[in-house]
Image (cartoon, rainbow, N blue to C red; front, side):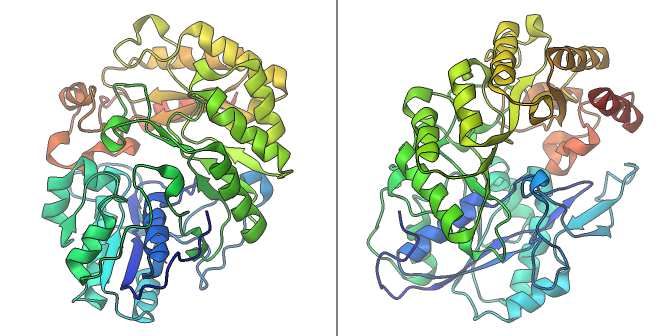
Length: 453
């Protein structure tokens, strides 16, 4: 689908804002506000004027950042400024930072814009809400009369908290595509006839990625939702049902960003990319190969091991898959029923063998192992690291984040030394909120050393 407007209706000026991150650590691992930019694409397609301010912009015109080397696949560090730690986390022996552009750059960028009729702000990790709050305050200081709507993951998982503390005029939960035009009408009086079907992913305009100053990498989603119900994951809360795009539409979008904007690195944001492979990922990759596109694909959200066959692994290599992440979580297969039932030891070994035989190098294939689970035994995590290394791929430690509305939430609340239910700031995975003091930074350093030996 073209990214050009589909009609000439005179619409309002809508400002999209990707907020700052406040955290102990943050890095651009193929991160883009895809939901927000998708809304921007929809608004433009209906005739609205859309502006975009990215507080995390690594390539801001006033920055000295340069495109990262191909080995990084488009990844790179954010600008950062040390700021005071939130109340209750003063004992954490690390700097707490605002990640993104300096506040004066944001104010100058906002001041240079025409006043918007409506402002849409997104949110990602729940414990990043202090950055969201600071961003909204900055926007309102420049445009006090513009209504601000907050959406995204934090807004969906902690809506009451977001309404209390973030300063938005309205908090919207769940996917915003279906409600977008109605919200615009509510605040601006502009109500064009819908030009797409929110239930048909192929009918939606492509995200407005071209509003970025530089596209070092691009996100792509071939599907929404996930058929699995893992105890630690909120996918079902965020996307209640599984839906696929047509492979042809995904190939066309990838080709557009590659040919028209020079993007070589693409990160799949799917929660279940390989599910229903015969009708989805296989024809998609065949389309990429047939189009002769020379690309690098990355899977930061992890692949489901059961779906990874030898023939699919070979196809992935031919299509340009470069960074593979597997959703393993633990190798304690006899006791993982409380977490999920998506993988067995045989599934893991079979998938790894398929990838290695296809030609993927060990450093390209990583298996996520969750650290910081309620009641987790450190020796079990050490054994999992050893099992993954013995299989010939790379262990990747993933810090567990307690998430409300998930089956594991109650256990996380019970195990934590913090009052998780009182404030999402305490769910920050950098502080291992569900572990005792025995799970220290020294322990984490030792575990990371094990993954590299």
